[in-house]
Image 1 (cartoon, rainbow, N blue to C red):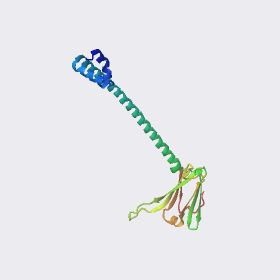
Image 2 (cartoon, rainbow, N blue to C red):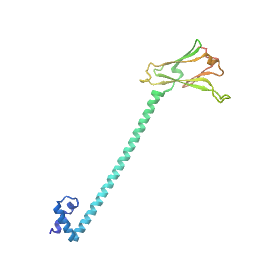
Image 3 (tube, rainbow, N blue to C red):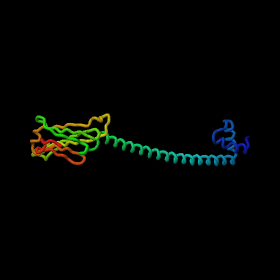
Length: 205
């Protein structure tokens, strides 16, 4: 029969499963008859389990920290990308209102059409947006169109708006100005210029 000191020397390897089947069998038989070796086996097994739990806890804590840092970096990166996208959209797709000092405009009457020609002089691309101006509701609850809002914006040149896209022409019929309160508002970054039936046929500037 295998002796106690040999069993005790082999217990750690036995717990880790590093022994041959025959040696494991001999140790198991020995521990069935030897309470001292069995108690040592229980003690060593418990110590190893506790050590594993401690290591696992450290690993879990480390993984939590890594995940937290990674999540923070991802959120920060995503926020930066959104900010960059917003800025690019503003400069290349939305732009800012053109200012009087950077915009040359002239008006003319051709036949029964009133025209306003606009040109940017600061090297940026010109994008003009128009919106109808509505009056008060009539007896039928309908808001009549009483004018047009013309909003020239300046944008950084891009593949969508080339750098030579600096001019724009807007037109309206003379009959429109003959209607009551009809107006065309040129909305610039530093103020509005209003054209009505009183001044539409005068040369500007």
